[in-house]
Length: 204
Image (cartoon, rainbow, N blue to C red; front, side, top):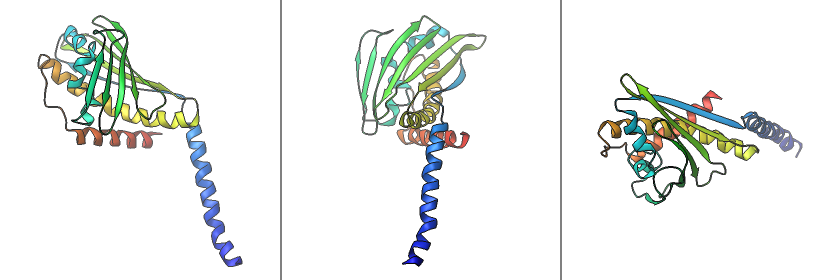
């Protein structure tokens, strides 16, 4: 019996250390986070604004709509502040709401995903450039409790993938005159999300 207890002691100690380490790691996560990416699109600012200020256009380039080819989307409201979009797919569901619009300059959108207690806020800004429109997409989130901080950490990683995917597809759509393009396959979008989460973990 003493031998068994002696053998189990290191296991118990390692388990306690792992739990304590995980607890303090989560506590070290910030209560606020943000990520931002920029791209130059060879098109007028007005064309970019026309795409991002109407949620009905987001099906052509939104990362979350590309997750599942069977995703269904319902809309409410006219383009601009107050417009909403709710989507339901096999792998994810959520809601977009346009919070603020500045003509030919900025759109602010709230993104809520099923399973995540805190929403993510997107700000897409665009300004004229000699070669077209300089577009910056920023994602922000908050989380006070330990669970919210952990979910915020995951949201940050997925937001990197969502922004990179969205900017690439947005550029293609705008430069094609607003016509649909061959978006990345859902499997590629999912792989991008997993890679972004791993990169976020490595960066902490």
